[in-house]
Image (cartoon, rainbow, N blue to C red; front, side, top):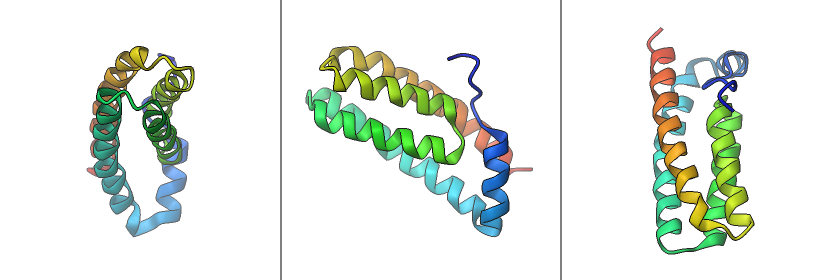
Length: 115
């Protein structure tokens, strides 16, 4: 997974072309929504709610792929699979990886917005 980039620059360039002036709003919305998604994942993990965790991880994965954050999407996929297999106890590591990768994605997207 380490070969997967933090950001898919081609996908982001296409999004920027399509969204034009709304691109910054899209990125800010993704970042804001993602913080809530990570909190929801922690809550589901703490309450041992496998179904809620799986659904949240699946939804977050889709958002990551759509915005051009493939590595973050992969981490969400692994978290989703752990919950799907009934291994929620293994999902904590995936969730910490999601948080770490989200920080890297946030930094990269904020840098992109400042250009």
